[in-house]
Length: 423
Image (tube, rainbow, N blue to C red; front, side, top):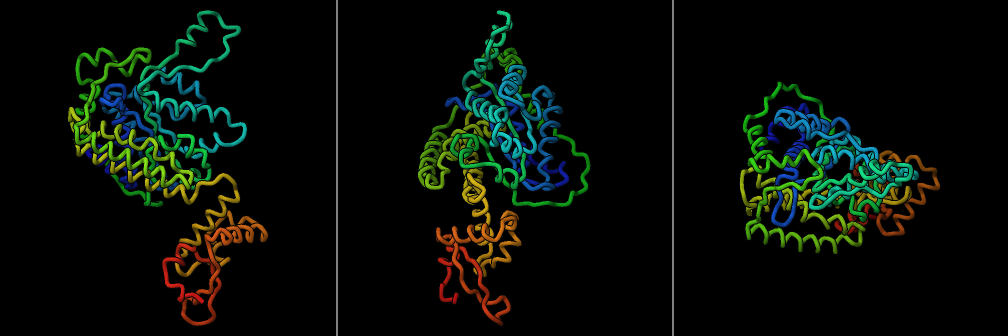
């Protein structure tokens, strides 16, 4: 709460959701390789902030870097991105614990999805592996050693990172992000590693702010968390990637374990529910993420045990984040341009509510639909009508006088109102 308050106070544009994500990322970085639960949950997490240009999402990068420097931990600040899988590994060899803030993440995903984007795709694959290697070892791929000396070849094979802790905070605009992902991203386990937040606060004018000092309590807590004991300080978990750290083990209370057991069952039921939409895998790591968040919540309140309130808050936060994003993905996940346009047109019509949308209004509100020729537009509308997603009806004019106007209405809207209202 102290960190969130400072981030909000120092920002020219208020974004409480993004501030909370940044605060969690800050703590996730500090606790990396130093704390672990009895269920082998570490603190490393991936975050994704989604907001329109000019909404204020860039402040998170400045906030995290300023906090880490103020706490005497500038070596935990990582690069602004990675160029390949070997770039990820080499960075972790030097910085086994670090935080990377990546802007325009949607373009990174877009580069990984296009043909001949092998380098970007390998980077995404490496990031997926790091997330799951917190309790294991990150090893290099088998590159050719022909022409190398024995010592160089041995150095390459020796590049391993034990218990890597990479905290990733990515930012993107909704247009770039949702236009660049396909259903494979939801199935292959990449997206479900992220705690994603899409802000409801759009573009906003900046406010005048004064320089806000970081609370001494924040700095004191950070330094105490980094060096909680002389034994752990000697291991220096942020410095040597080849040595296994000796973390402080934080147990769960029986009540907290029961809550996570119930949440895991809930996630399994949600996987069954969303399987028809191709989004079942989005829930497969939610319980693990919630347990990692609960570790941060416990240590941030100086508790040696993950209590029931830590579990409750973490589960509620993760559930809320995933529920909003998964339902958003249902309306924009596509594998072809035709499907993309159809989904966007359906959303425009749905937002038209009871009065629907005329052909002219669809043309006005949907940029991709506007770019089609006459035949392409008819194909999109005919396909949606054939799938019983939309229906053409005569809607009374907005003024109540004159001839009814022909409009397309979402079938979901029609089913929820008295059909006698329509001619």
